[in-house]
Length: 309
Image (cartoon, rainbow, N blue to C red):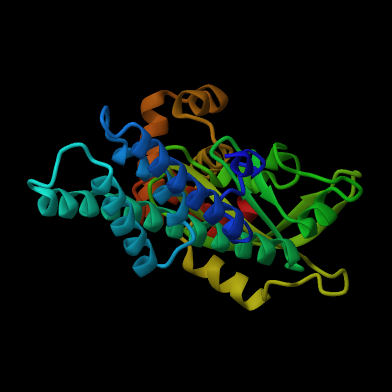
């Protein structure tokens, strides 16, 4: 037990702890067997073998784990005060119970290890990427930022987690809509406002997703070289302008405020319109954009009407 006390709980199932944990498990089996033998006339302690089996489950292969379960069930029967009558049935039931619990715990630990390994690999991939990568939660707060993003947006600082993305890329904050259910991905070129007061052009590729029912956003940001000011092909921009439906002044004004995240009531006050007029204008925008939700309208605004925003 003293060996177990010195193991950090966070890294208890680390493969490097295999030897001390298996030794502790073996010591527990011996201790339980001795106590069970000593208390033979009074009580049976066979249930306590679950503890060493649970400890060993994270490090033993399945056949070896089942063998340990059979051995523990045999010890439980040897020191049982119930007598030989019905012993084969009790042995089978005890073995099944111990093996079932042990294999279940082993599978949980295996899945946990795989999940942790995948997270570590993904974290290493993100951290070593030369591209700036950030994730943003539903409040517009940065959840994850690699070293490249810190160097791009806040040179000299050590962390961006917990800071509002609107301070660096306001367009990304506007792309998050709480009521949006549809996931979309797109790209745009915009200005990155750096912490030192500078601004630079950048290509931003981002996608929205949901986690636990909450909208979130992941983005890859790449600075545009000064000698390549036209990172987006003019032909492609002209094609987008030709394909998009034209908007009148009221529709353009409402679209801009929707992009800023204002609700209908605030839009009505800002433009001195009635709520019903705002609603009608939104319906016209939905029809022209071919969408039926505000989040989808924001996506279309980013893709086709960026010059109006």
